[in-house]
Length: 261
Image (cartoon, rainbow, N blue to C red; front, side, top):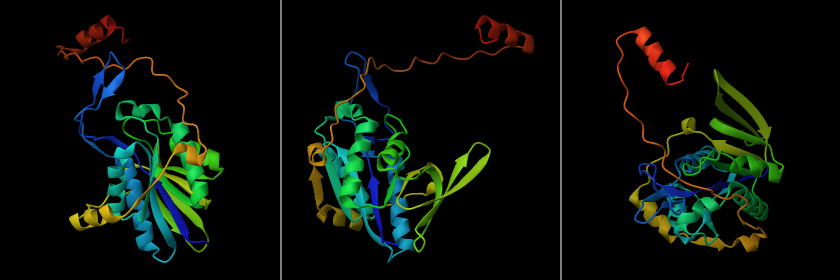
């Protein structure tokens, strides 16, 4: 069995603790002065890759974090390096923060498909979704483009480095499901897979010294022109306050008035 060459795609997103501000007139998310961070599901993916290397020290060749976006994504890549990744690659699309949602899952999957083939990787671990567009599509599309098996929404990952077979457990309605598949393989991570480690200052400083390779979509022969158009973007309607009713009959009457029953 060849050594594991692991690719971990990561994404720079508005921090999960920040409430996005919508500019309805321009149909964009306001990004001025907004804090960005590593997508939480991507962070879990990086952690899992590092844990696999810690468990199979001699079986892992390298861990590479890859991000598609503008130059600011280098901060996201450094977060992955600080967690334990060996190398970082930025696919610089030149797309500004205000229009980052224009980088569609299909385009990202095509970029990753080209890079995975270029790097000769045999395992791709990525978050099941990003918290900005919530598409949950990139991993599945990538597996289709590569013609690799896939195991999505993983809550447990085990790889037998001798046989080259991965066993993945994922939560489903009413229980859990366990799948096995030979490498090469695409795995998408769920929240319960692990708890990402806290990066120490020493690791952060070391990450700053590691170089980031920069590529352009044209270098990979990929056209990232958007195929979808955003018609409008608006805040959800404000919720109205509830009301108390004295008895069940009054409740039924209110529900009828609201057209709920």
